[in-house]
Length: 284
Image (spheres, rainbow, N blue to C red):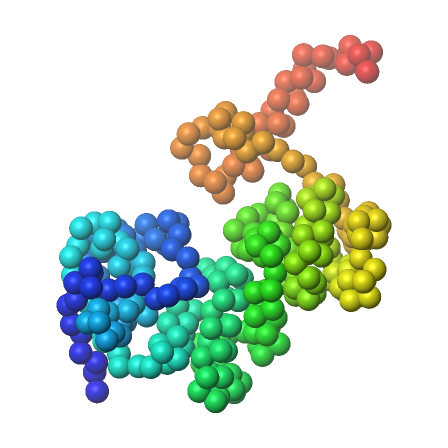
C-alpha cells in the first residue's frame, strides 16, 4: 500500500534531537537547493507526530533548511507512527544513504542505532543491517570513535574532508586503538601529533595503547615512537594556501590547480636557466 503524502508547515517540524548528520553547504547541497527552487521538493520528507501536535523530522533536514532559507512554507511529508527507538533506527537508516558521510557522523549514527536496537532487545547483527554497508567489525570500530577527543576524531574526518597528500590525517584503525586511552592520555598524544606533525601508524598506536594500559605513557616515550620513520615516509611540503590562491586565475577549477602550479614552476625554471646561461654554475 502506497503511503500517503501530506503537505505540512515547515514551522511545525522540529529537528531530530542529536541528529548525527551535519548539513554542509557543499556542492550536493547547492544542487539540491537549485532543484527545489526550480521544481519544488520532489522527495517527501519523513516525519513522526509528537504529543504536542508538532512533527519531528526523521529524514529531510536539508530539504527543510532549504525551504526555510527560500521562504517555502510547506513541505511534502510522509508521517510515520513509530516509537522513540523505531524513530532513531529509521532516522539513521534513511540518512546512511547520503553520498558523503564523515567517520564521526557514522560513529554517532551507528551508536544511536545500536542503543535503540538494544532497547528493543534485539542484536544489530544479523538484524537491522540492511542499510549498513560496513562489516560487523567495521561497525564496532566506528562506534569506538565516539570515545575519542574532538581533536583526534577531526583527524579521522579529515581523511574525507582533505587531501591526504597535503593535510595531516589519521586512519580508522589507529584511531580505534587510541580510543581506549583516557582523555588525558589522548590529549598527550594529540600534543605530540601537533608537535611532530605526524599521526601514528597502526603498529605505533597499538604500542601507545599498551604503554597507556601499563601506566607507562609519557612525553619521552611518545617522542621516541613518533621519531621513527613510517614505511615509505616522505617529508611533506607545506604551502600557504591563501598566498597561492591570491596569485591563481580567479576562474581556475580546484582540480586544475596542481597542474597549473607544476607548469608555472617548469616555465619559471626554464626562464631562470635561460637568464643565467653559462654563468649559473659560477653562482653556486
